[in-house]
Amino acid sequence: MVVVVRVVLKPLFDVELPGGFEEILRGKLVGKELKTGEEVEIDLLGKPLRFRVILAEPSPLRVTKDTRIELSREKVGVFDLEFEENVEEVIPFRGGFVVVAGRKVFILDEGGQKLYSGEFDELKGVRVSEETVVIIHGGNKIRIVKP
Image (cartoon, one colour):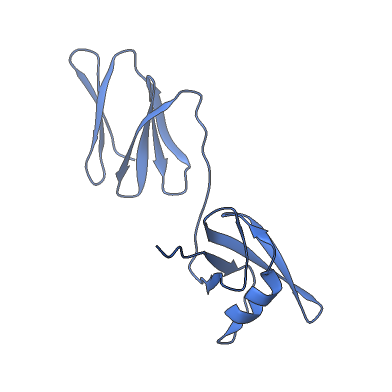
């Protein structure tokens, strides 16, 4: 079985990089340990160039001459959210997602910003359509939220 060790880097500067630049990066990174999500700085001709490690596979990894280096121009947002209660369910919908944590329901936009939150004594379930969230609670109640 062949294990592919690769790193996907996103330049944190706005300059067009020439073809084959991945080879230069590999040479500068050999021996360094990289982890997904971190930033790394490469010195090139006396100028520091910063990159975000979009993916290190595996993470962490030590770069060798055989490590595959890829460049990404895509905007990738990575953020972490932490809740007081254990997250039981995450339900995506158009424009965001719903997080069910204990008796609480959070509706967040795609960037993780809270659009709505509520606490329910008898939370029975949550259903979503493209643009509507329905919270089932109590014995015979629903709350309809249109974020």
